[in-house]
Length: 600
Image (cartoon, rainbow, N blue to C red; front, side, top):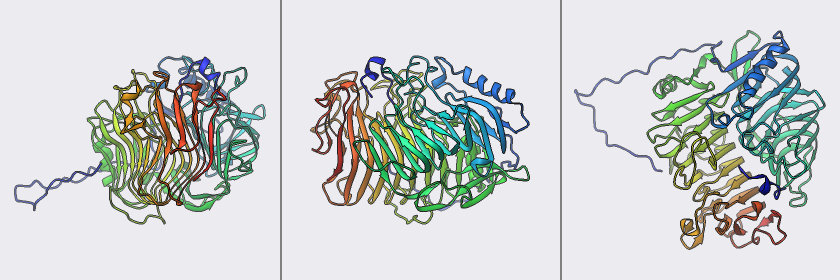
């Protein structure tokens, strides 16, 4: 998301390769059996996972959070550091815990329902701690809270986050504010987040949040909205009123499968619960979430020192994968070929492909669940960072689709990464439920137009693919290309690349620049609800983009509640969709958006 100066913020409110293989000869070596890898129902999750029970003194719990957070506090290296933390709470009540969350920090309960774990105090994210920009919350990335309840000490829990910071399966026993404590007086901006399968007893206040997506939850009430607030399947959501206020509301979510989660059973053994597929869902899935439990003995618990070969051996053995916090150097593609495989992680485990390989590939099989992973592009260009399915194949997976949840991609961080395409989805019916694909506008290593290169964040070739919570930013060509038919997106957030050097470097044939969201010309049915695309051409404000949404002109292609903004009025987007919507900067000035309620 934006790394903007205070003055600007004050204005805001691939095809597969085949080798010929002949019949085996006597000289061919015997195949080597996959290495057996160990499993356990009570595994060691490694030193970066802290597990508490109700007998743990409150001071011990507090000290663990403080130690982790203090290492982040106004630290020049924290945002792209190697530290990773996961704090897990066994069922019970934890009094007077104030959990400040910094980068790469996850907090989760180990009960089967959120109310099995209660934190009395706060799970807190605010501004004031980020090195180089203490005034805002626009860089509060890469942290999460899941599967617990919070009884706020002062009646209101603060969760002032931006991208890649999900709150899932949480019960807030009070109010929830999504803005930092200093949101007034022209500062304290926050920029985009995701809330799902949660209950807020009181009011949710969005405050300075510029865009936000809430899915399948229950809230007492909602207050606020800047540009793009989207709700699907939310009990208590505000009425659909875009653009004034900017609320886009759907009664249900067409297809959902909630994210798998770790819990501790009555025998003291760990299991992963995999929720069932739902159609036209609304409200929380809990208590009594439908689904199945998988014992940890059917998972390989991966650690950062594991090689990709060892991880693949576990998959060949028929195991699922559970990634613990840390950075993983991936020198060969991790290949998922078995249906119903669960690939999940805690504490933002980060996969770094080396030598130009794809980090993770999923075959065109049914029911694979991928969640809780982060990908960093390596210095050698990868054609893709993750792929799902096989190009050109169309098998019906409607009854058991693959799902991708809380998976985050970076091109440029502490390494000057490169990747042509971040995520390619070929399997029909895939669910993309909250991703952030980000070509970095800043990093621990220098970034720039010719440095951390990336064409496209997401290419969808599969039919009947649904995206709920799609964040894609700063890529150099089309940022989303949708080739499959009958695709649907509920909530899209985008920023165009900041660092375009000049117009000549950014031409799409005769067009100025590349649209953020491109629906291919031969698509006959597609639908979008709640999409925003923003320009901030600070390197060269004379750069222009013809339009942010580019779609074929046919009745079956429909867009609802879409907008463009020129942040700080730097750079021009001439229209919202095709030749419709008008230009930003808007003559009204002061970062005023252009809105299109429906198209065509």
